[in-house]
Amino acid sequence: MEFNLIKVCNEINFKKGELDSLKYQLSNLPIYQRIKELENEIAEHEKKMQVEEKQIITFILEKNLKEIEHTGMIYKIKDTSRPSVEVEDIKLVPSEFIRIKEEVDKNSILKMYKETGILIPGTNVVQIPKYKLDIKYKK
Image (tube, rainbow, N blue to C red; front, side, top):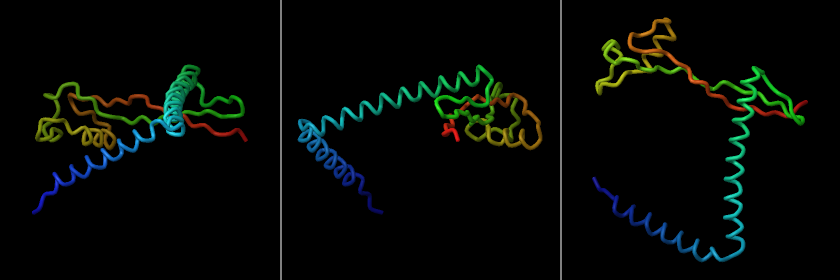
């Protein structure tokens, strides 16, 4: 079997060098500077959007609302959280739910819990709230 790792690494480094050279050549051009400004502005707006979404989700949850209407838009939240297994004491978990590397098989425990309702000793099923904002135009 032939290994080409060094060859591939050299090609990557060559391409990176060429890319850096082109960026340097363009860096003094007004259009390149405008591209960088726009990338920074977009990143800032995306951060603001995340903060706004979190505030809306918090408001809807605190007011115990299903949706809110504001400036012609309808804001709803979707609960996207899923149940997961939290291991409280690995020593109490039956061996068939322990993986070889001494790791609890949380998927099997969760599957059994969903199918039977039986909680495996040493574990607890928890569901951490997770929401997604759904925005639609008002009809």
